[in-house]
Length: 125
Length: 111
Image (cartoon, rainbow over all chains, first blue to last red; front, side, top):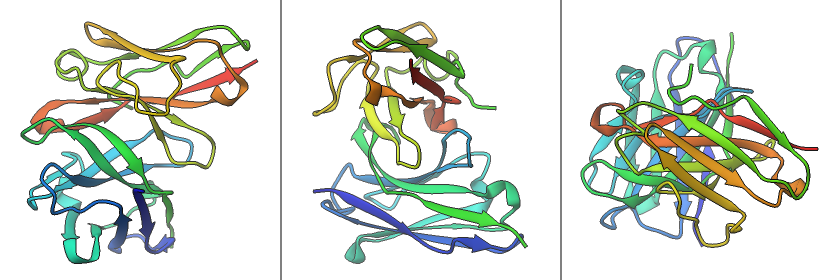
């Protein structure tokens, strides 16, 4: 059974750095073809893909947020960590971690098959 | 503004069929057969319903089907049921610069 769960602060102040942890089970990030990433959703708005880390430690970031994002993994702990710097109220959103499935070579995955429950992060002073 | 365009809302009566469109460009939907669809009930995480344009994951009802023509993908739900009422999002791989883009979401109301 594959599960993912996000953890981190629910409230951060503007300009602070957000650190979110995704703890997963049922698969290993050391297995070829496996990827885990982050997707966010502002209240009442659409989904937005943020970042992805591959089994071989390669990484990809949303072009619009690349300068603010860092994704890392701890394979021994089955965890993926996302940091986002210089938080702003517009970054208020539910942040989901999700496994990327259907590896199709290069940097490509076909879909996001398993999702965490999400964690709401509010940016406010 | 989302990269892929979906209607804000659609509705249908139980038993009817509805189709949700998802319009992109030649850089995303038009270039890759990597369109997926997600169902999201209020307060819940999205659930994968269709991948690679028209494939259904195990456990997803065959009332859900997908297709694509040019830069537009579509999700069709036949035999509408009350539990289908939810938000639906399309997503497409968009190449090695943009990676993945989502639609703005469509709220399905079952009348």
